Length: 184
Length: 392
Image (cartoon, rainbow over all chains, first blue to last red; front, side, top):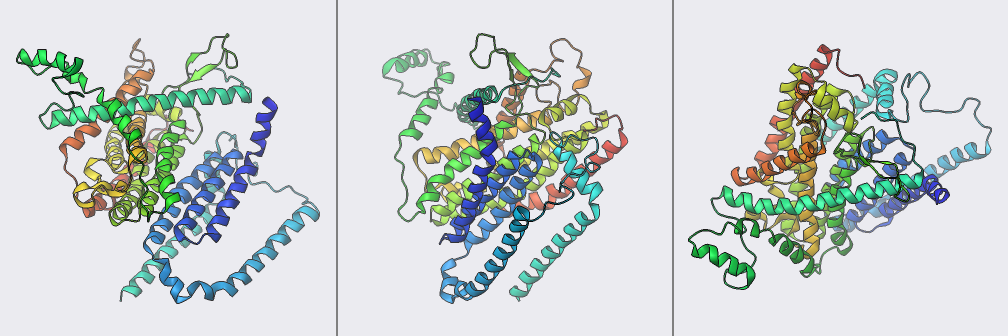
């Protein structure tokens, strides 16, 4: 019993990872746009569960709050109101096919290259860790990971973090500008 | 409170978690029907009538005979005040027994899943709600697997408990929006859109109003926050907590689609809003989810602002900390505060009329969000001014 539970616990990550992939497949292949969004939601929830399996509680909950609770809702909102049949008549999606194939091939090559070098290439001299010791000074990363993440964001990497927020602001302003232009 | 951590095997952990989950679900499914009953009665009294008084006619059967005696004495039967109670059973039986209709043109899969999503998201939140700090009781040694282990007042005392609650609660909106879309009908769609926009908007001031306590305590752990907010706040933090309690509670009304903000199901405009096409137990799921969400909102409000298991609200508990019985944490205080707030939910429903939709949005974006930002700023100033506050 104990061994079985431990086995399940170890392989939980795999289960949720496969679920995330399943959600992503549903996102790509479903005919209905709302079904795609539901697949996206499923995928995002599974990714949150994956984080939870690796005891990154803060990251899991942030994933839930930001993606599942915020971004996908807005997606759903837009998709619900758009009649996708109109775009089918215009042939919008057919036009994109060659570009999409090219992008997928490029992405696949890049991923295979990365996986190839990790599995078959020489191992790195310094092991890659996300939490360097000075980043999480005096913090138990397992039980205080909100503090550890905040230490990273607001002490270790404050400048990149702020630049990221400026990028978000630019995107926001851009969206407003585009919307305004269409109205005129 | 700070008992030595008990090491448990995986099996024990699982069994304990299942037991606690069962207890929480029982608690929820006891308090929710009682709230529905109380809603009948309180709304009745608010509108100067009796509310539900009987389930049978006043002439036949045992109930009729008991009532008749009272009427004959020229009184409204005082028994009838509690005799609306069996109506609860009738309500639930009705939900279970009615025909489950799926519209022909509906998107079947999503239509069937949406109510469950709504209900699950509202119940799972209780995984992180702590009713009592530490162990409620210890199992005797005779119990097979979990003998000698403490039964804690919360299922998981995770270090990001508050964020977990907010995160899971934010998933609940999908049930409403997807169900509304899948109905393939215009009134539900309008209701779903309203609900989506409203919940996403009100999540901002809701989270910001909870940010003030987070800034004051410097932790996201449910138990630690409750303890620190009840006992370690300086006196000048009390007004901030007081105000953010009202902001939080207002946003709670909007998040649960309750009366002044119940635009998603505004029956004089949208038939019944997002659940127009639902019937039977699937409607029941939405109905239950709304009430469970109310319980969640009251649980958070009472834990963080009203002191939770500590008696005195708004951080005033440290003045009565050493009083023998009242000073000790007690799960009953928590539940009593929740019931008080649930009563307030119903009371407000009976008192305040519905807003117009643009007013609802204006309240969130033009007033509550700037206001809560100021609150967070003030909380940060208190934090800066009081070096004695706990550091993580």
